[in-house]
Image (cartoon, rainbow, N blue to C red; front, top):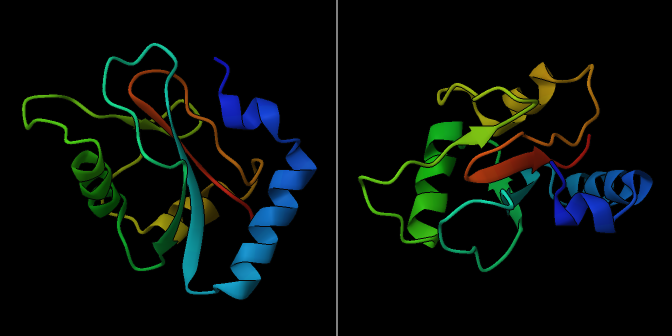
Length: 119
């Protein structure tokens, strides 16, 4: 599956931008959220987010649902390396748990992809 942001920005540029942001905002995690190409839901007004380090994945789901005005009966899925992440870890913990893989994660299919920018 191809995602526009990943295609338009080379890996090294994404990595350096993520590291720069993490140095400037050490208590936040840079996250890029992009709708899957075939998703039938509203668009987000932006792709880049600076997520507080104490925000859980579940809380981030809630914020994204509000931004796209998703109804309660509509499903929203995040995929990180083709796996739906648990909702209880904080966003930095999700990033650390994937430390052996590239620091930018591209989920597979469904509604939104979520990938963390570097550190």
